[in-house]
Image (cartoon, rainbow, N blue to C red; front, side, top):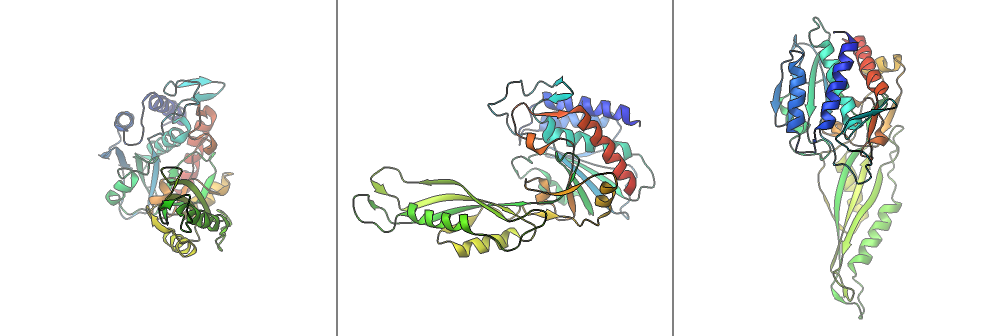
Length: 353
């Protein structure tokens, strides 16, 4: 297929996706749109929950497999929108609409790349496409629910807006609920076990703590207290104080290691919500990375979370658009970015396939 026609079809798909609300857990309508788009190219696929899986026509289990993945769900539009988030409008080379940048552009670029190579014979690698749900909410029915159905995967490209640069490392996420104990009492009397004060002591420790292992790509592990709640009335010292710790973990530590270190530093009872959203990285000598560099792509470490966090094989994050536009009001993607994304993905994969 000519890339010109493919780009036209990609834009038509992205426009249709923008028109259709697809909040996490509510992706059925956009999933059907993507299925119909694949039907138009004669692509065979299967569906699990709201996830679509497809493999190249001449898939050979003896060959290594590359996974192409991006998500179809969006966050809800914020109150700052001045445009209809579900009305795709093009102005000054920009396509506006919710999900246009995160991750509609990357998704349709990878889908287009997959379709381009779908009927190619004698590929060195298999291509496996997964258009998935619930990425924005880290939900149970997204990519993680599909992994057990996939054949062995050797490498993955996760489509997110990176300006078509290569995010060769990504910070993991560890969320911790902390409970500082105290002793309830009247505020007018002496009370040395104020749960709020105990929490503040631990928060100060967390604020000043620095992890020893610093990543060249992802820098330090970042610890941030983001929520706190305690007390019900002004004259009662609370018996407990709950606060939430957001930890962005570099590839030098596992989430469990980070938790154990913080647990030793604090007096509060710490409870991790999950250890599953780990950091990731890929060697700079990987063939895909080298091919990307050959085509002028740069490498960097990403502070934001994606579906990479649930993968347990080498992966990188790449796609058209700009991460800074994600979740912003009047979200948009440049049409030139979309076209460049398709062109570059095809060129890089031609180096490998």
